[in-house]
Amino acid sequence: MIKLSIIHNTDKEDAIKIYKELLKYLKAKKEFEVLDDKNISQAEYIVVIGGDGTLLRGFKKIKDKKVKIIAINSGTLGYLTEIRKDGYKEIFENILKGKVNIEERYFFTVKIGKKKYNALNEVFLTKDNIKRNIVSSEIYVDDKFLGKFKGDGVIISTPTGSTAYSLSAWGPIVTPELKLFLITPIAPHNLNTRPIILSGDVKIVLTLAAPSELGIVNVDGHTHNKIDLEDEVEISYSEESLKIVLPDERNYYNVLREKLKWGENLC
Image (cartoon, rainbow, N blue to C red):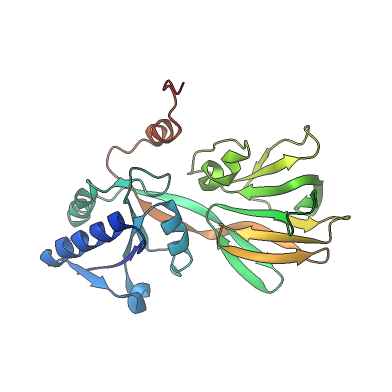
């Protein structure tokens, strides 16, 4: 018996429809057992139905990172939710045949004081108040001073997060199977302040710098922490990884072309 649990976006009609269809399909298959939320830790697979945001919210609930994620997009296509709504049954048929295509996604461990978080996409520091002109921060890499960043903030992202907030701040796109740090300034005060890519084997420490006194640290867009000059944000890669089930014949470059509309006449 293959045990699985389902997380779906309860605010989207398409996601609710797919959820109901999937439940009916799985109940007709004797090989699958659908667990409730209380027993999610026993699941071998977790099905996420929605968009990339649904997966990021679900990521916080997943304690055992050995579980495999089946991410079904209830819209068209996502960077994380790559399984189309009209093709998810093939995934489950392949599971029964023992044909599972897995990609590992590496994520951060983030420490702020006594608090500890996981970040699949990014950690970013911004102003604590819209009235403030800039926020100043400093970044240290394995205790070596990298530099001071002044502007609207700074993003530290994984390759998975390189197509999220970092991309909108003109950060580079990095293929998601790599383990790297992307540091992307947000509207820097000095235009010579550019994004930089670092090895994933280092530890990064992010702090506020004078004259800034307060800032907001955001983890994957959902967790907010107010910090002051005495606080340190430690960021390193977890020894674990997220296992995502991919559709057959998946090509990441096709995903980029479709999402970013490369080669299309947009005028």
